Image (cartoon, rainbow, N blue to C red; front, side, top):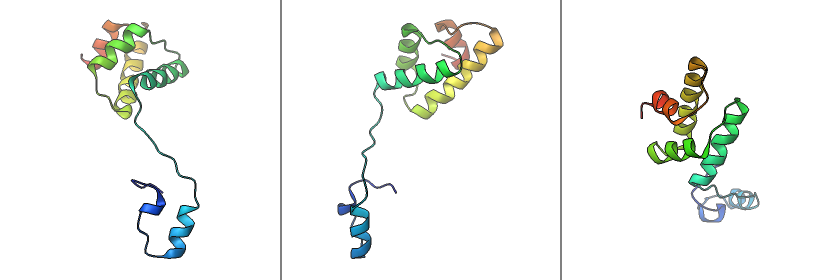
Length: 100
């Protein structure tokens, strides 16, 4: 279940439900910062057999959308372009693949 706060603040009308929900473990999910996004992109790229240099990641993150879903979609396009061109991932390839 997802909520904007802990179960105790959700205002359940049924006391039994409120009690049961309050007993569950709660996790706070925070957005990834650029360093965490870089680690994620490197890991996913490595699983695909791609290497992403610091220069490529820096250029990409400074000029692209920040949502993780969009970055992973962009990685699909980069992977396809690298395979098509039989090239390693460089800034020029990144520009071609993403139209930057």
